[in-house]
Image (spheres, rainbow, N blue to C red):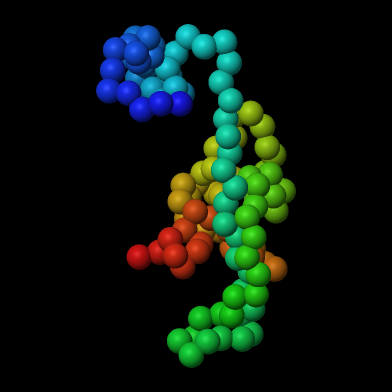
Length: 113
């Protein structure tokens, strides 16, 4: 791949841009599209042990596939799966489980402001 300032080379894609959904991101008119479901950060904390500020101790960190979240939340994975449906309607919110695991797009302290 090489950097170019020749924007005309992308004209074929501009002609395919749709309004919303996949067509607005990847263009329309392709035979198929692939969805890549990024793994999400998961952390497990021990609520019986806290740090000096009262935060539960971090025990374990992992990256979970969406399928793990679906299984733990009693949902079914399918080609049109949506994150908000796996997490009870919260797009970005973290979801907590009874075994101390928390998963979501904002779980990691480095992602919080």
